[in-house]
Structures are given as C-alpha cells and as structure tokens.
Length: 246
Image (cartoon, rainbow, N blue to C red; front, side):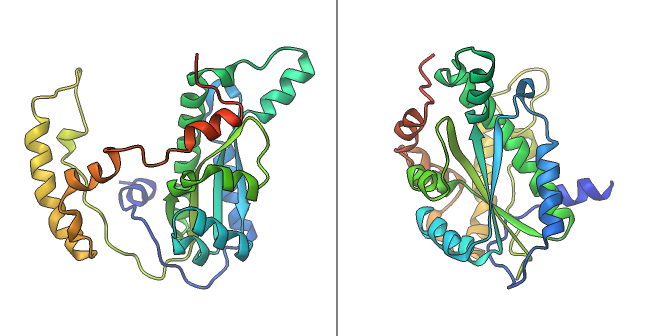
C-alpha cells in the first residue's frame, strides 16, 4: 500500500485545531490540486473562496448553526458552484446561458465540487493537516452569499475547515463493505442484515463521543432525513439563477 492510499483510508474529521497558521505556500498547493481536479466539459464551474479573516470565520460558524470549529480553524475554504464565469463566456460569444435552468447543472457542478473537495482533503491530510467538511453553510445560503459577495449564477455548496489538529479524534466506523460494493448488479436482499450489524457497531462509537442519545446509524440518519433540514436551499438557488425545472 502506498502513502496516498494510507492517508485516504485513515481519514477522520477534525474539529479541534492548534493556534497555528497554515502557510501561504501550503494554501497555494491546496488551491492548485483543487483546480487540477476533473470537471464536466472543462467548464470549470467551481471556484474557491479562501477565508482567513477571524470575524468572517466567526460569522460563518454562526451561519452554519454554531459550529465553533470554523472560527477556531486558521483556514476556511468555501467551494462554490460557479456559472458566473459561464455567463461571461455566453456574453462574449453572444449565446444564451441556458444550463442553469436544468437540474443537470446542479448535478454536474455538485459532482465537480465533490471531486474538488476530496482533492483538497487528500492533499491537506497528506501534509498532516486536519479537516472537516462543512455542509452547514447551506443552513442559510443567502447569508453566505451576502457575506462573501457571491454573484448571480453562483451558489455555496460546501465548506472545509483546515488546520493543524489539536487531537486526532475518533475514527468513525463504516458499514460493512458488502453494503457499499455491488458486483454487476445492485443487490438489495443483503442490506437489512448488514444495516442491523452496522447499527450495533455504531453504538459504542456514539457512546465514546458522547452521542449515545442518537442510538445507532438508522436513528441518527433519520434525525435528518425525515424532513427537509435546509429548506432555504431551493428558493435561494432559484434567486441565484438555478431554476432546476428542466
């Protein structure tokens, strides 16, 4: 096994950081690997906003629902769905920008953003930095848009805290690989038993991190998925130009 695979398999979320800045040279490298990531049609419809200002990080932490580690981390990176650049290209060649009206735009740019995010994560962890993705920015995307001056045809998809770990925290167990890997066809019959096994496996982990009230994976997941937990995402996307109706 090479070092890259070891780093990726040893991933864990870090929510406690040392009071130590991430050097500019490392930030530049993280940006470079993100920009080198694959993207749909070479449209390059993602952008990054690098945030180091303490007051802005504090505001982002509040917007994200009180995630104090955002304020504590020396670096916050926002991954942006960015068809504003596409709009400029459309104006340059005299063609209409239609793709943001389609759900395909949202799917394609979300995939691109995920690849971009993982590229940053792998690079950061290979340099002994700790990270945690921040989906909570979508708790109030309009506030993020205002704070970071995002133009039309853009949307804040995800964020990432980056810093030197104060501790390495617990490594969260995953489902059995048989629940993740399907050969040739998607096999449903095995899943109930595997989920039962995983629910049992998660109980001691949740207890170890003080979250035993969440009981297990099934209960924990449905605490989110039994309702629309970020209800302003869709209307804010529409206001930004993502109609998602084609």
